[in-house]
Length: 161
Figure 1 (cartoon, one colour):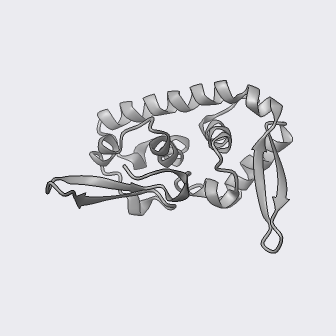
Figure 2 (cartoon, rainbow, N blue to C red):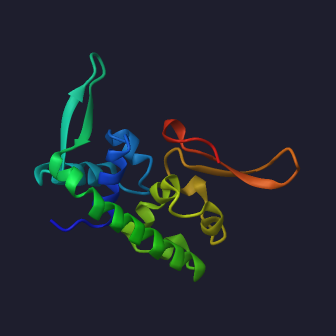
């Protein structure tokens, strides 16, 4: 199985502790949860992931990497880094995120979270956080020095920048 941007991004996210459908949905702009669940099932059937139900009252399916998934992590990270290079190129060309290949637009919040792409570059071409579901927010706010910056909230998955 050749790993595309979405599958690679899922493996990288799971390796970093983002391991439920709800958590993963926050990092993949516009991906229908059914599509995401289908990709997770496919990665599980291919032996990259395993899942188990956890919780006493509210059960959640939690995904972890298998040994095969761990071995594929280098390839997955290279694919994610390649995606970030493509995203930077498209942003420098001034192409709207809406005009990007769908799989690349889907993983943009994850690329931001991983620090592989700069929010300032993306915001310059019209990246509007309110169009992107999940906890990735980029609202301008004045700092103590009166300069405008971005407050990026990644929920439980990272700090503020």
